[in-house]
Length: 90
Length: 289
Image (cartoon, rainbow over all chains, first blue to last red):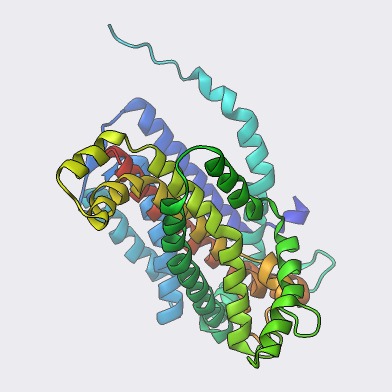
């Protein structure tokens, strides 16, 4: 594992992503769902909404870093608000 | 009768997953690890946090390269898509000449990138290249190694030469799939040539055109070899597109941290655009286009 240059923060980052994927897989198996159409006028499933959330969160974090440049953890609050909005309306 | 759900077939996908893990996921994870650390070689790393991301976001270098990249992709799409459609509309529909045209069109697609680059690199040279020499003899000031405009024209014409065929072939396939009945109906209604194109051919080609746009956009957005062989990113930084800049940073300067941060942002942009295109395509599919 040495050549991959692991650090704890990046390991935790990937563990969170993996946990999310596993959780959503289990959810998809236990509670199958029908896709719905939200404000983007595209059909989305829970998995799609997770993808939109994660991708958007990456951009929110970068925007925070580029524009504000301090107190990076607060960007996660914006991400959570964004996630809630995506799961509610998209 | 209810269908039995059997998810065991997913196990058949396992070999692909393992392959993708080794070829893509693990290297990508390593890039993420590099992006938050600094190294001076010897596989020794020092924690740097978000420093590289911040540095990259504030560097003109990356934004300039992104600007050039978007301009390049925009220009080649604006030329290749209409030109490809135009070529497809004018290709013979059947017989010997149809096959002849198809073979002719696919020739540029078969040539490896670096060979295309070399062809154009020599073709454009003022001293020995046919194009460069002719233009020079005609009194046109053309020198792609020194003049920004000439360099840009060269790499754009090269890309158009290499890839318009792909758009044309896809559009041609789309055109061939339109049943004759549509044209007959248009004839009865005395529709003009433009209206046939606008209301029959274009809507029917929409699906394949989206694929063409997606393929051409992604390919041009990640282009490296061809412009690198022709101009090497020059003159100055005039044709240093994103991936050329990235390779310079990662391998030329061995700045692994900043290069990793750069490539992750590059990756995110590509992921976003792919997702948008994919969503649009799936939705077109549902509408039956």
